[in-house]
Every structure is written in structure tokens, then in C-alpha cells.
Length: 297
Image (cartoon, rainbow, N blue to C red; front, side):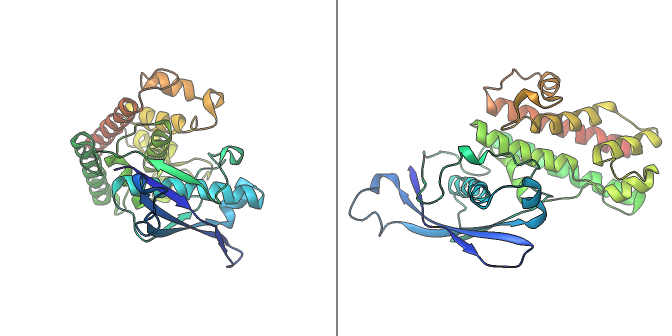
């Protein structure tokens, strides 16, 4: 059954100078009831609180109105996913910071509708979260591989290699991508998962003190130092990250975006988002399995 989401007037929460918070109230109702006498009675009422740290908002450098719109866009997409998954709660919270949100901001505020009175109609989907066996199996294999890598790395160095930045990122692996917007969210989560590593440990093990050297390069240096480098691992992680830089607003102007399309044998621009997303997950799983294999040596 189709659902319609009606957003109501926003509330800004007065809090400390380290965070900006908005609450976006909304109600959800079956689309067939919209305009009928029982529309309000049959609606479920919810709210989502979106918080942005001062560090992140400063790097975005938006006016208050534009920051409000961007926070709404993040909150709206979170709500849409929850409705589609059938996991929406009465009160949702979304915290945005430099570890889980990119800089520059991926959204153009001029292209975001006014949060006040926004209306979204969602078509029903026959599949909920984890009902697609293809993505269920892929996601389970990815999570198993990540856990096994951490176990082997911990055995060697008494530390975990892979760090989970946001638990919700792992949920994206279980989901299909049927549109450009869904593909972007899945890709963002995959990029986060691919780059969140124990950089302090890697820096120490590789003997690199330069803080400008980041996670993938540190992993490459570590593997090279231990003579177990499998270049395909690094190439896959780098190209996932390059591909993310092209969505949704930077396009082929970002360095390496077209090269990343070629690496994964994607057409440009991508039109089959489901196939592209499944391909990315398969490449990521292959990279994890190769990493696990070389760490065992």
C-alpha cells in the first residue's frame, strides 16, 4: 500500500554551541486516505531529530536557511528508508558529524524543497529489509569477512583493523538500489565502510608519522612492508572511494570518477543502479576475502 508523508513545521532546539539540532515532525498515512474524512485519524505521528556538529557545519559553511534544508534532506531520506523497510519508530534520531557525513556537502540546498509542508508519496514495495536473498547473502558474507579480518589482525597485533563508524552503514548492504538517490546512499555507506580503519595502529605498524597519509594508503604501506601486498585489494577500495566522489553533485569533474567507472566496468552515466550496486558489493567482498587470505600468511 502506498504511503504519503506530510512534514509539519520544524522546531529548532536551543542547545550548546557545539551542535545544531532541528526536530522535523511528520505524519504518515495510506495514500488512498489522503483528502478523506478519516485521513488525520488514520495517520501515525512521528518526528526525527537531526543534529549536526559545529565542526561539520563549519566545513559546509552554509547560511542558517541552507543548513536547515540540508539537515531536512538527510532526515527526509532517513525517514523514507525507514518507511520502506517497515522499521519506522515514533521518534527517530540522526547525528551528523565528520565521521559519517562527507565534506563538501553532497547536497545542493537550492535543489531541496522547503521543509515546511513538504509532502512525499512513496510507492509500495513488495520487498522489505532483508527479504532479497541476493543482498542478504552478500551482506552476510561481507560482515563475516570483516569479522574474520579483525580476528586475524587482532591475533597478530592485538588490535582490530576495521572500525565501524556507523552501525547503520552495515544495514545498507542488505538493501537494493532502485534509483540514483538510493544508489548514492548505499555507495556512501560502502565508502565509509571501506575507509574506516584503525589508522593509528596502521601508522605505527607501517612506520608512517605523516597524518596526511590516510587509511587506504596506510593499509597499502602495511601490506607492502610485510610483503603481502595484493594490489587488487587497494585498487578496489580506492575506486569505491573515487566513485563516491562523483555522486550526487560533482559528476565527472571529480578526479578519478571516470576511471572508477572503467575499473568496475560501469557505463557512464550509470542507469542500472541495482546491477551497479550488486557489482560494487561483489568487488568489496572479493577485496575483503583477498585481504583475509594475505593476512593469514
